[in-house]
Picture 1 (tube, rainbow, N blue to C red):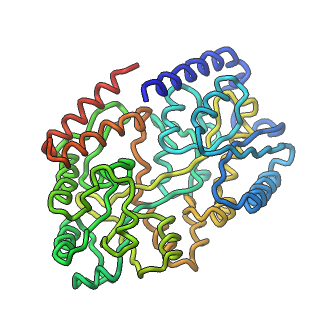
Picture 2 (cartoon, helix red, strand yellow; picture 1 turned 180 degrees about the vertical axis):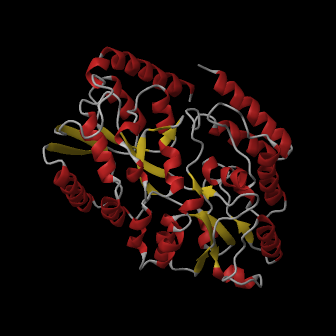
Length: 422
């Protein structure tokens, strides 16, 4: 991790030097208003394989580009598909060498890293209020850093509890009236244990986005703020540590939850009442067909919130064609093109009106209504770097080495040390 961080920092420094050297090219007319000059030229867009059907995606991109060229006929758009593996290194290396794309796909933990060191083009001068109308408000959280917009979102997810209907009935509860609060869920968890079921799958070896963060947000807490204030050990955040610890000590979650990365065998085997799932789980459960499932709205304690990543398109600040690139980001994320993209990829659109693609899909329509509660993770340049510290302290707590407060305090100290690094 340390070697990777140093490598990324070297590339970012190299990028900054190149950016300074060619600043006259990329910002020769910083006061230019959008639409003042003709948009033409050529742009290269880096995308990823969002499905396993390359031909279908190729047709998708042709249709999206054709829509863009209706307004900007003199811009040639080149789509290049790069693999998900090592995407950070590929993007950073290309940008530092000044031969990267003009537009590329980014996720929430990448955006603030890049924006904080000047690697991304600020889009605000290309946007007016009308351009932002229609987006789900929560989807814009991950595109904003220090009050500046660096991207526009094209897809979202919303994680919430999926229940095994057979287990719900076995504990004497109604699958049409699923828990809405922590208290209600804990009551069901106790009943599940009495009937020899686990209440919840918990992958303590996985991402904090799916283990502790939703509980922290629901409790009214936080992890770290934009201005480097550490929140993970405040009174509200500690409540999240407490409920996770309680579930483990009471055996509401499986014994291997400290380090497990998935508990699919128990879940598909009918031994677990609920899992935290998203759209991919709808597909898996329908494919498996082993039991009926029901989806609940995100739980509420002080707040009703959950996790859900956001996918966005951004423009590097050293692009040769910022106008065409910015207009492409606006075009690809409009409602019409989101319908095209998300019909193929089966993600949830970030344009509210484009969610009509799921009108005939009961479960995806339900999930799409929950993106309003979905936070995209910790939006901070160190968001990814601090996860292992939090994970280690939660594991220490679950193993009985620390109390919830001690674990939260220890995590806070490690986060503070990481934030103090240059």
